[in-house]
Length: 112
Image (tube, rainbow, N blue to C red; front, top):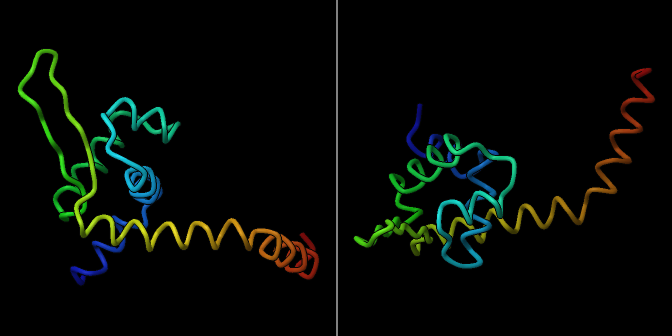
């Protein structure tokens, strides 16, 4: 598999998209980000953040305090990717009526 395809998979995955868009707003702590995204398991969010961190898109800032504090933010590369993903998400939202109309036409033509 080409390396760029793997990164594209990470960025456009279900949780990758939501993480990038949320972190574009501001840095988040883990549980705060989990609540903001909604319906993501702790395991999936952890894996997504680790993958995006490995790709250089997310910065993990662990502060040596008690209790431990970890903040997640976007790197410059991550902000660049997040802006692109957000533009696609906005386009999807804006064009949803057209998509639904196309689906109805397709389903009607196929007898669904």
